[in-house]
Length: 535
Ligand SMILES: Nc1nc2c(ncn2[C@@H]2O[C@H](COP(=O)(O)O[C@H]3[C@@H](O)[C@H](n4cnc5c(=O)[nH]c(N)nc54)O[C@@H]3COP(=O)(O)O)[C@@H](O)[C@H]2O)c(=O)[nH]1
Image (cartoon, rainbow, N blue to C red; front, side, top):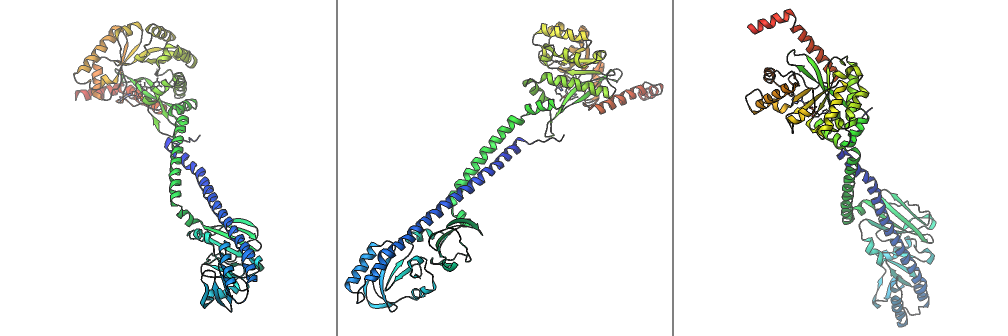
């Protein structure tokens, strides 16, 4: 089965990226909502302006034009012009017009020299009235528009809107839909959509980078607000900076949360638990070699773990984890079961000794005995060695009792890492063991006279007096091997012979090594060796 593994960092980054799927739509919604509100406010305001102009037209301009008396610009007319200008909100600058000339205005009074209507004022007939229900003309001018009733004109503009319209990202227009014809009445209107087809009363749409809202509130007259999204986004620098900072903070929070989630789901202990369950742990076998015959007489079974992401975790890392997470029995049982299976498969069961490492509690709880009984066929039990460390010494009497029970099965017991910790004579006398393994820390440098050499000599003495076999661990050089031979240490283990090997390699190593030994002891080999030593 393919192993799928994401590192904590990848998981965190994934969570941060996933958060974008929440943040981006939220931001889009936020911006859209704010654009909505803006457009609505603008359309509302325009309604007010539109209806305000209509109201002012009906209430003031039209009645006033009908009430003007002759001659033009008489004092009564001027007073009415000023009063009306003062009272109307959306129309101002009332003026009497005769023959294309402004004769007087509410502001200047009677003009000494009548002013011809500016060119743009007379072009109004090209425009269709926005307020067509007013049944009058709207005059397009530079920045203002004027409306006419009889001999009176009044100017209207978009006083409130013009402030808003000055924003670079906003465009605004009013449309008259008379005869389904598009006519802009907004000054300076430059909107690119000139074949626009507004059908409903109120709608929004997105087109060519513009976000557009329209509303037709006066018959045949519609208002349109378009927002150039890119420019709008650019203009919102402050808002965007704040949003980006918030986004970064949210992503960071998601990253951290992802990492935490990862470590709770994918923590090494959890992976280890799963690995044990899925038989992901593999075994290596390190040869144990006879000093006298150079034959491989056995092996130490050492556990290996390739975590789900493919990287191997050192036993020095995962063995303490096993202890801290209550997985000792599961590991020891898995090691025992797998070792039996693999050794049997390669024809080594009952051919080589098998040393299995244990945890202190494996012994104290009697688990190791049950475990061996359950998994090792009885006739093979004498081929097994249980390696106990000095850490195993919790309750000496209990340990001694359990060790006796193991030995009663026919299993041998070996003290591992001897010399480290607090090994003492009392312990060794209390528990009857078959073998002591000298820790490799004493072997490093032992070839030269040193304190270590004296310690090894003492251990040799001790083993002799207790009548237990010795194994020298961590033999890495020929000199170290030579030294242990001089001390009659029976067995050796270390990289000099071989590193721990996977079962096929170990089987091959045993076959090769023991074949060489057989050859070396043949008459022909003996002769060669003799000649070599004489030379
Ligand atoms: N209870 C269990 N403990 C286990 C099991 N599998 C391993 N272990 C314990 O983990 C410790 C580290 O083991 P490992 O990394 O496998 O190292 C072993 C050898 O590879 C290493 N070794 C052997 N020869 C040499 C050498 O010449 N040089 C050198 N630098 N290292 C060498 O020593 C380790 C074996 O040590 P020990 O067990 O003390 O004999 C280790 O404590 C293992 O016991 C398990 O299944 N159960």
